[in-house]
Image (cartoon, rainbow, N blue to C red; front, side, top):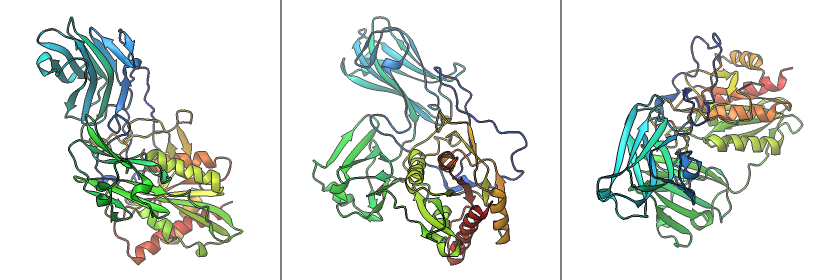
Length: 479
């Protein structure tokens, strides 16, 4: 899964961009991963109090002058709020959470203005006395910005004589979809999952392994299912066991609403350390991904390759297969957890790429999908723009795979792999970065993008299985 990096040049509130510079001349003449975005454009939501992907600056962290109480900042004059890095991608909503404690008899109470890094005004909104529905009540004052811009600063101008409490300022994508939280993982029956919808939208389907459970959700005991409405979204929270008492060991949960889809993977227990093949052979973990986007109508070629690999076709090798959720943190944490617990000697991760087999040379300590309007979310709705994966890790990690040997093995079976120095800054890059970090000093690890494919007959499955087999065998056999 490759999405091109778009680095911002802002330096806001002491926060610096986490960027990586490409070395001149290292890019291949033809990018083997070109064309990944042909079926990907989406936009979604967040957890706990703010829309998904919102960058939030709480009142007690804002540096303007004023009395602070209960996490809010009392304002009696102007205040300029510098926004955290990564808050400024795509068409946006800028929102200030305010409480008016004193105001003039008429006219303006407070004016909210969004600006770019050069001070250019991007949008304004004004709270007037006539719009106010009583003092001492928290209200939202949002600005909707239509263009794809970078918001660097929000200014609040409080009219003389007014007193306004500022709880927080937040910036998030203007177009919100549906999301499930907290993300893929192991769940007990008593654990809670939350479905988050844009306010005013209805849940259309709630599928567990393809079975629609919406009727069960609607009829559930209110003690096990709660519904909440906030300024920008509606929340439905439920206990796993209440809606799925007889669930399978692994459940693919998919939520549909008004053309938007979100998905996550629910497990009863951690993935078993099941290595197939030669019991005395080298242990190799191979990973692929679920379909993406979340409403993807075709299988992910990486999962097809992983599941089609025949352990019996390999010599002195035992293989563990793992299909990862298309989620930033969850995919990387899952593969890291399995490496620590199952102790593979080598790890090869596969992903859905562009037009060719791409042998990835470098992983980057960066998450950035801001080149699409509104950003490009993972399968549960997370959008990342110019954010480091790990602030304590190096900016890049080089592959630990024997790519020359893998290339020769693939050429020998009729394939034409290409070198790539850019795995994107999406989930594939995240997993590659995690693989290499976990296996450094312990074995080989790295990433291979496979050609974007939407139809899988027997011949296609055999082909991609053979590609995975060749890569694994070459990795095991390389000196």
